[in-house]
Image (cartoon, rainbow, N blue to C red):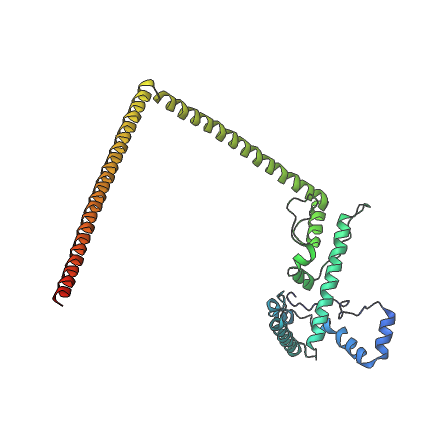
Length: 307
């Protein structure tokens, strides 16, 4: 939804009603409920011609053009439409429901979109002759500011056939005053824009070439300077330093290996000494056991002799 604008277009009626449909009109006349709704909406624009009433109705427009669709949004929109209906009834002095106001507003928007499409066809037609542009009323000029994207869409930046951003009626009046066709004027503007773009591209290419040349010069100077520093003396000195460092490294490795061998030999000697001592202790223990057994045998023999 967009901002609410109730205008003075007598052809704008509620959604679903065609003012030129004779059969639908006869059916509504036969039905008193529908005929009452028709009579109620037929004078709706006459009640809204006052500018202060239109300004009062526009105050709640920002809440109605929210695209979010959920329960809370629908509830808020419904309350806003009820508020608009109450304010309208207070200003216009008639009994207009929110349903009638909303349908009438949708009808006005549809009629405005159709008029804008016809104006666009008149501008771009190729049969010749002057374009017969339909003038827009005050409320239509105010409404088109709120539904501009729905009617014209986003502007195409690289389209050679795009029309000016102002309203079609304003463009037609300006072209009549200048004596220039809108399409020719648009083509001239587009050609001028193309010239500006080409000039910018040429400047960018020149800057890019200059940057490349500067980079090549600086890079060449840097390479030459590095080559001048690398002489035979410096290379030989570096090789000698590397050889000395490698010799020191090998010496350190040899020293560490010798230390490891010495530690291993010491460990083996200690293990051998421990084994020898252990054998001696075991032999002594066996000898003591043998002596003990001998003493027991000797005691037994003496006891036997005494008996």
